[in-house]
Structures are given as structure tokens and as C-alpha cells.
Length: 468
Image (tube, rainbow, N blue to C red; front, side):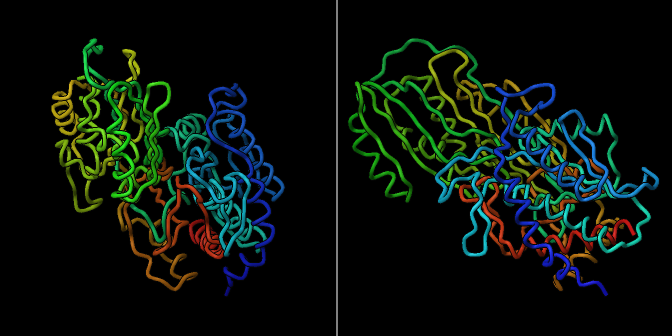
């Protein structure tokens, strides 16, 4: 009988060396360096080249799909039966305060710290090493195994749509980009952009909100918020320290050149789990809710207060739930106020149950924001994904997980969106283990090294079970 864990442990040093090289690449989407060769920017292009070189050196057949994605394949069987393993090489910006630089991997206390360690470079490389184990052992397979490396998972997944159009997508497989044991259903997304219905009017007020900004991505809980006010604001500056202390957050306020500048630090988290973070933007708005600012600023602040900690969308009238994926969740992720006509917007993501009615959600939201003088300018919708629990792919992955860990391979659901949804019979499979902290999109993101090796063993066993 094969000792999958022992096989993974035997590759510990080379896995860590290869992963640290990948983590050193700042693969954040970068419009300023986008080219035909690197459509997502230079850093992501470098990460894709690095991964393909590792795969080719391992003896796999590789291909670069116009910089949008890459693949590494083992086997030359009927393409229709190919097993897909889909991971991503792009990462979100490294916001927040890190103990060590986010793109200089550091090992402390058995953990490997870096942006992308758990989301999703570590698990993607674990899958590559899992396939290498199957290859090195010479195990007979009857199906191809194709690892597909995406480059735009964090910003809309255009990479997988492009890949599917050019190459076709496997029907069955998994994405190592979530939690163990197995995620068989993913919520859909309703991601609106809210803007004022009309240009602001010039009005007198004791204070004036000059600007407000929080958040860099809709799928991240804003960790930092910054507001600038002018006019009669001394009392606000004096009260801000007490407000921050009462709520257990860091913040500072100062007056400079007749303007008061407020900065508040929250806690970042994945946008699909807003309760896990502290939204700096909506919290700062709750402090400013009684500020004597101009009407258009009052409307903006009032709407943010309505959204503050409305995690299930109850106050904005869009709450719903079902038995498969539970309750809808809301994360206000990008919050901007300015004095120009197009400088004010609120972007949030609602992660919706698989049975959600998007038309009802839109109608209810329009009604809720209308009272604040806002409208829906744009909506990006992503459908839900649900694989029947009786599909063979689930049984195969349950076998692999149970054999390596000895634990019960229960089925889970998530508010996150993974590449699994691009395969009709695709599920999300690891690499965060039950009871462990998920640090995706947070400062000091890490993966436990022992968990990385255990995931590698599980992926090797799963690949063999699916393709033997």
C-alpha cells in the first residue's frame, strides 16, 4: 500500500524551495504593465512563466494560452476524459501591516508567511507535486490529468473564460482553492456599483466632507479608511480617540492647513466572510453619522451606516437563504466620496444562495438606496455552482481525503467563488483544513508547512483515484 504522506514528506525541501520562489513574485494585476504577452501585467506573467518552467522540468507537457492561463498535462488519452485541476497564480494586493515583507517568504513557527501562501500559490504547487508523486511512482492511469494555472481569479476570472474558449474545459476535477474536506456548492454573486442619482449641489454646512476612501477590492473587507473634512471639525477630532478606543480599533485624527484628516484601521478578511473582519470604511462612517456635513455627504455616510455590519443584507432588504448554502452575505468593499460628479461610488459584493432570485435582490436594493439619492449604475452577476452529492467525483475525493487523514470527508458549501464552477462536475478541494485559521486576503497570510505536505499527499491520492 502506498504511503502518500511519506511520499510528500520526501519532497519537503524541494517543494518549499519551489514555493518560496513563486511567492517572491509580486503577481498582482497591474494595468500599467499589461501587454499582449502579459495581459494581466508583468508580475502575473512572470509567475505563469515560473510555474510552467517547473512543470516542464518535471516532465509534463506544458502550454501558455496567450498569457491568460497555462497548463501542464500528464497522459495522452481521450481528451474528453481529462481530469482538471485548476489553481490560480494571481494574488490580491498586500494591504495592511505585515510582520515580514509580504513578497519575501518567511518561515516562523512551522508556518510559511507570504501573500499567496494559502491563496492560492501554496495549494496550486501542492497539486503539481501531487501529480509528480503519481508520475514518479509510475502508477497506471486511464485518463489525462491537466493542471490549469489561471491569472485573473481575484479580478473576475476572465482567464478561465478565455482558456475555456481556446482549449475547452475538462468536465470533472477540482480546484485547490478553498477548504477541506470538499466544497460541493458555491454561492453566486451580485456585485453592484452604487452612485449618486445626480451631481452634488453647492450648499452651506458647518463642516464639509472633502473626500472619503476605503477598500481596494470588492472581495476584501476594507482594512483602512481615510476621510478629510474642513470647517467646524475640532469637536470631531477630539471625539475620535474615544470612539476608536471604545471599539477596539486603531485610528488617528489631526488638523493640518485647516482640514481634519481621519484614518481608521480595521481588519481585512475575504469578502465572502465579512464577519471575520472589521470594515474600516463603514466603521468610520458610523463615527461621522452625526457630523454637520453637506447633504450629499450626509447621504453617502447614511448609506454606509445602513450597510455597516448588515452582514446578511437585512436592512437593505435583500436577505435570503436556502438549505444548501445558507444565508446571503454582504461586504461593502470599495467606498469613495469626492467632490466631482463621478468621484463617489459604493461597490459591494453580495454572496447569494444557490436558489436566490437576482431580480428580486436588484429590485429591493434599488428601493433601499433610492431614499439616499443613489442608484445602481452597474451590476456584475456570477451564477452559483452546485454539484450533486452523489456524483462519482465526490466519492473519489472523499476516498482520498479519508485515506490520508483518517477523518470524516464531510461536504461543505462556501460564499467564495472558485475555478471549480468552470467544470460541470468540479468541486473545491482544500487546502485549508478544518479548524484551522484561513488567512486569505489578510495581512500575515500563511500556510502551515505540515498542512502543505498533507495537502500534497491528499492531492496525489485524489489524482490517482480520479484518473486511474
